[in-house]
Image (cartoon, rainbow, N blue to C red; front, side):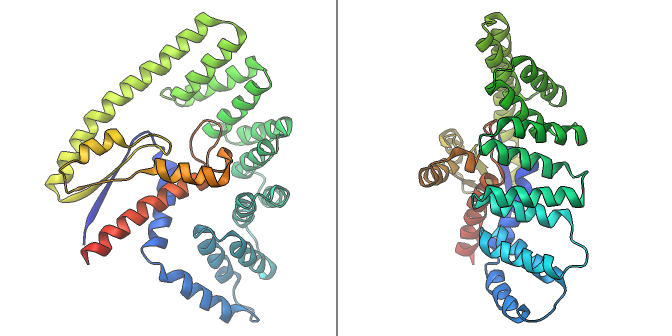
Length: 318
């Protein structure tokens, strides 16, 4: 059995991890979906426990079959004695991926009715309204999210982005300073602060924040290069195949140089996959949030890339 290690350059691993795990489970055990389809046939017309339908919905959602997932969630909700907010959040996500904003909004609102303390639903509502161009409504939901979860970095970033679009610079700067308070290494927050100052004509302040951004990036790049060398050495000693990849729209060229003449390195190019996906979609917001990071659909696309690469390696070795 081959062992794999994963090195992600400029990628938020705390969000990405769950999608990689789910994609690996789905990709390396593709027969699950056909088994599930047979299971669905046996469910139809019988009053089974709602958990079976909900599990099927999750499988379809992870496979990107959103219409089928919605059908399963609805059947599960219909026979369930106690529906959780999680199900309506998953239902809303499926509608959002299908660009059915009205249905997504209804689902997220229902999630809030079931659990008014779940900050995820508020943030997702804000995202729906932002996509529709209803910025004032979006800000209201982001603010509610932050009142429940002051540590929600995504909520601060996206609300700040909307305030900046509306030229409410003082509010935007306050939110970006909060982000820096939560994460002093967030170069994006410094960049957005700099842009606020620049648009206000305060060029000295803008320059300071641009310099902070450049300093953080330089420090990060040096640390990343040094750490990659250490990881490569450790992986080689333990016969681990190391996976290298950069952020979706960044070239993997520099990382590819490290993999030359090394059999234990698997270099993955996400750039080509995302360029093709954006070409078909025509909407950057389908895969990215305003701060340039991936949304859930974007992370899933990366995860599928990694899962497929690992699947190929395992298949070739069998």
